[in-house]
Amino acid sequence: MFRNNNDLYHAFLGLGGNIGDPALSMASALQLLDEHRQIDVTAVSRLYRTPPWGKTDQDWFFNSCACVSTSLSPHDLLAVCLKTERRLKRIRRERWGPRIIDIDILTYDTAAVNDAQLTIPHPHMHERAFVLMPLMDISTGISVNDKGLAEWLLLAERSDIEIVSSDGSWWELGGADERRYSQD
Picture (tube, rainbow, N blue to C red):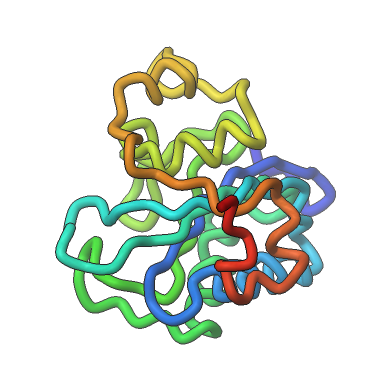
């Protein structure tokens, strides 16, 4: 599938965080990814404020999804995502715990990857409204386990999720001070 560095693939990424200024961290991550010579950020969802999932005794998260075109393989894209997290001072302490930034590869064209480092499609994306809602902002054509995103979203808990920005341009504005995106 990965013939040479001139081939372009489309990957969808999930971004989130709940420490410091999560919107700024996510905007910085997207800018760093977009500056990479083999990655182009082509679409970004609205910004969402979401309750914690898995480990619920922590601050709420901010979440978004992005589409990138890349000539990198899935594993090389993962390496760039992890390097970006480290540049932004991500420290991994506990599963589903608080974090300054998290970048997950949700899909990579039609590729299926399942090894010790990476699973694509992301194994839990269809269970999480904080992934499904922003992903649907930028793509409705994705299906997971033979169901479309909208079908999965009907099954996911989404009542407390708040839309924070009116569109996907928040990251180009620097992401800082998510209060300016409030829809009050």
